[in-house]
Length: 331
Image 1 (cartoon, rainbow, N blue to C red):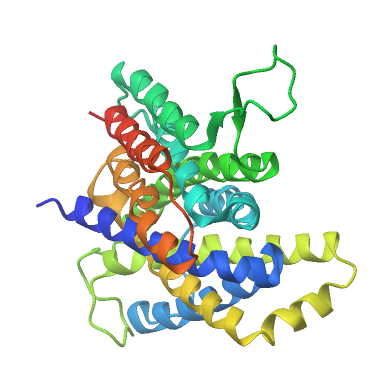
Image 2 (spheres, rainbow, N blue to C red):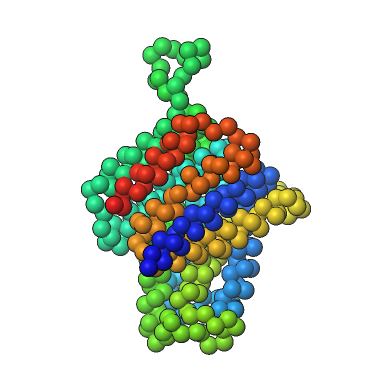
């Protein structure tokens, strides 16, 4: 009972830890080298996991449709979404970056409604407004009397770098869209397994660990997504950086950054993403995203302590309101 909800809550904790590690690493080595190294580590862990649990180091039973949908999910969620998220961490930090992840819930609900036919109640519109209001409360502030702005200028000003806000907002939208694409891919994966005449409760032939197949499927799906993620990030690194070899070399020789990348990898693409896909198998996409969205609240205290940040009351209230809006979205 409530298996999907408990897994989703664990995902929120996992992503909180990931965000803290990723903020340190992204500021030390840059978002593209970070993601190339992170995807390489993730694929290594996933290959080992599939060999132990599926008996093969690749996604067993996955057909063409499964690969297509999960590759699309990887492009949206990893290549675009994670690139923007890491860029957002550089400009506005993980605490505000995760605040914009609340946008993933409305995005998941809308795309789930359009692609999967999932029900979306009218109260969802209220939730969307509340979520956006919470974000606005956190990032907007009054202009000071002596800021040199003309009297007719807007009474509120953006308290964060515009570029960081843009990247974080795109990341939140891509995360929600990518999750729905992933769920579609998992549905095709389940159909492919059924067509092969294999029971998901059975242990695959050749598996080292005696785990039922359904527990391994999310890791297999994550491997497909991570494969296109690594290819996409490596391509972007080469396109945007003539000195990409030097950047990668500098990144892998930075010990502190590499330990942070390892932490971000274990709790992010390996545990967090795989668990998020597993959660969608036990509960609706909307409920899963609602609980995932707790990360902006969970991250406030550790971010303030680790990075010596001053946290304004309006920022805390804004984060809580934003998460409350996500909850309204799926009541």
